[in-house]
Amino acid sequence: MFTNALRHLSSAFISAVSLLCIIIACSTLPALADTSCTISPSSLPDGTVGTAYSVTLEASGGTEPFTWTTIGGALPDGLALNGSTGVISGTPSTPLAYSFIVRADDSAGHYCTMSVSITVNSSASTTDVKTISTLMISKAGSFILVDNVLPAAKELASPDGRVKLNLAANTTINLQGATQLGAATESKPPAANDNSTLVRAYSFMPSGAAFTPAATMTLRYEQASLPSGALESELYLARWNGASWVKLSSTVDTSAKEVSTPVAHFTIFSLRLPGTQTQASTTQAQSIAISTSVLGTTSSFNTIGGKTTSTVSLSDSSGKMVIVLSENTTISLPVGNQQITVIKLAGAPNRPANTLIIEAYSFEPGNTTFSPAASVTVKYDAAGLPKNVKESNLYLALLENSKWTALATTVDTKSRTLTAKVSHFSTYAMLGKVTVATTTPATSNTTVPISPTSNITAPSGNVTGRSSDTVTSGMAVPVLVIIIAGGLLVIGLGIAFVFKRS
Picture 1 (tube, rainbow, N blue to C red):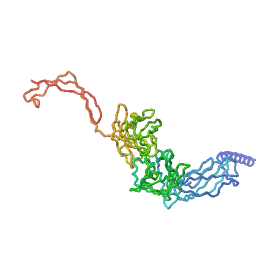
Picture 2 (spheres, rainbow, N blue to C red; picture 1 turned 90 degrees about the vertical axis):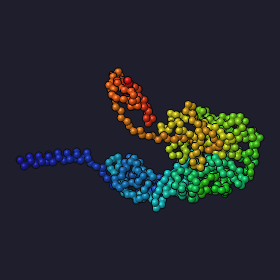
Picture 3 (cartoon, one colour; picture 1 turned 180 degrees about the vertical axis):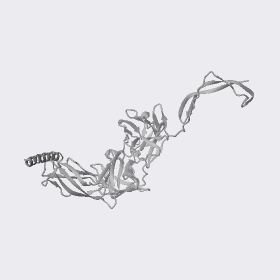
């Protein structure tokens, strides 16, 4: 009987322990691999440094939705796996062969895995990825170069579409060490020695930048901007070689009003017409209406024989900028142009050392000249100036040949304005010299308590400098002390000793 009871007790104990083990196991039981679950595609495409990459993994045979993870190895630098969609995407940055394991977990607690690899290739034996900023007149942008090669085609254009530069994919670009590429209206283009007529000109920067294959440059024109009787088909582009204008093989699209040519390197380029016709010969003794747009505010004025008939004041609606042309000012506009425009720029290049560019403006067309010079007044916001720029350190400057030239500027801190004379149109800016902080050594002060009316015993003998006077008594008198040191005003109390002589 004892043996049977022991047998039943042991069976009950084993059953209880088994139940407890089942309960514990159920709470920590891992997901079960599902042999019917598969992941595709079984192989992944290669990637290229600097080129966007995207591939979608899919799982079948399980219960959706799936959750995606990697459980071994590493994804290529720059790529990531989306845990909800199974998409591997990004831009690879390091050329290498990468192997890793992906895992898909379904909603029923099953999972499947697959070992995969992605090979990231570089476009050359070495990889140098650079971001090149662009500034086409006033439109900023950027693009990527990989080992000085443009991975994808790129079009750069000015805001008004007058200037365009098209670069094909895989173009090799040598920027001569620069990190910015762009174009600016050329305010003083070299004179022609072939009697050709200038329509407009632009400087492309950096000078000497080379393109293989050649880039395509396109300049747009307006029929109204051409001299009377000029033939559109005769328009052509020319480049300045340092001594003369070289006519380039050009394509004229009269429907799009565009002239294009391939360019292998940067310099000054111009849109021209053959012949000797000039603005003066077509405007002499004629009354011409000049339309204007100053920071978005439009108006107009008349000239006779290329001169103003009275004082002309041009400004925007807020009074931010005022341009004054005195009576009988001779205005020379590029051929066919009858509009003056001033726009605010988003930025400007080549900031001088220890100087900040507060605001920049493009005065167009860049070949416009004034005799006598026009007066330009720009209002500034004192509260909006950087803390290290004083109002007295503000000035106006001209950008030409990639260098800033300071203009003789009058600063009126009461009206918060800067005024300077401008003889021709170009890119101008309000600049501010940075105030360099100086350190003043700290001084220690000692407070001496005094009694304003207390008498003191004077030293015996003579006072230096007055050998015939003898000091007999004195008084300590409180005084107000004002000290200016290192640009700081310090006010405090001190004592002065008044002595009586006998």
